[in-house]
Image (cartoon, rainbow, N blue to C red; front, side):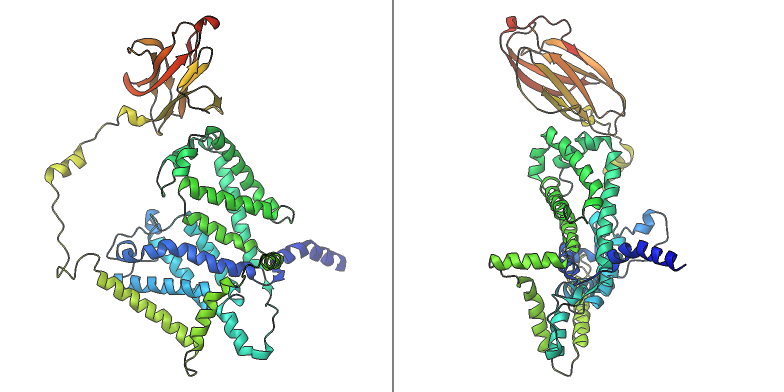
Length: 507
């Protein structure tokens, strides 16, 4: 019996050590500093729109209502919503500097989740879901034990009894954050594997050429590099799958994390994502250990880099707290700051008069819509233009992964010209024609094919032979007998040196 018990203990010892090993919470402290800053960038910008987005006077979109469920978190009156929003922002600031850290997170975390659930259309996004989980772990952790106002005040209170050795705690909270990212990446990889358009590069190309997030001029340029898109798709999936298996190995941990940081930086440069990369890279700091901090301090000491920059804000706040009268407890001062922020936020929202109620002594009347415009919006159904069914039409010579890898406008005899049209989805079954016309709009070659509703693109190949003379031609794409695209190209060279070709254009 004793042997069985000891065997079971040995079996679970690695798991126990994995979750309950004691370390100084440097990694969680860094997450505490940088994650709230990242998520508050858009939240600060939404402050002047609290009435519209989160209050009963606006048009909030609670997540529960989208699923046909009763909303357990009803929108508040605008003044109350603004006051809660002010409490959220001051609590996030206190969490960053580490002043009453746990109480700050106990206020900030539920309020952040609450406001996200009230606006599932804009405020609730992938990064806010990840940030909500990380905030819960920060609330349960001892992230305020180092690099914080709490730590500075504790050392001053202890005086000579204070020790230079940082406090150590079980690291299960940081382990759960690490597991969160492992599962997120693995799930994302499984989703991508089932998406054909991701591996062909078409999905990424659509995103890069759009401005759905923010401007991304680098992405617009890279969207034309088909080989890069194909390679990036496979590398991304492989990295997301192996992340969970390599991130805890000492020999591969830093490499995997570095690739992850580069991955998120590229999403910023090529896809116009700003907050999502900040949230993810900030949460990566949970992977930092005591040994990493020691190595970084030695490196900074060798390069004579000041390593106490992060401690400036906590020291300033701690100095301000120390200036309070001795009769006022620090907790009272912190609570007063939270209440003051709530009152100030409600007052600012009231005076901003978003709907012009105070300026006009009452609600503004709704303007009457023109009857003809209203009727056209209800009755008129404009048919989709034939051109809108197609995303692009390009001409080149090389196919890679059934995608046009290059785009050219000059060709020589003997080269194979490939014309590719990419369609917008969804679309119906189409009959698509591709023809070559000379400079006098006379059709030289013609081909057509059916493009079924499940197809994303269609290719037309043409082998240049001696039936054409050197000159300028146009590759014309037609759909439903309507010209959709036209691409001009130049043919040069000596046709006598090319053997006669029987079939000049094939599907």
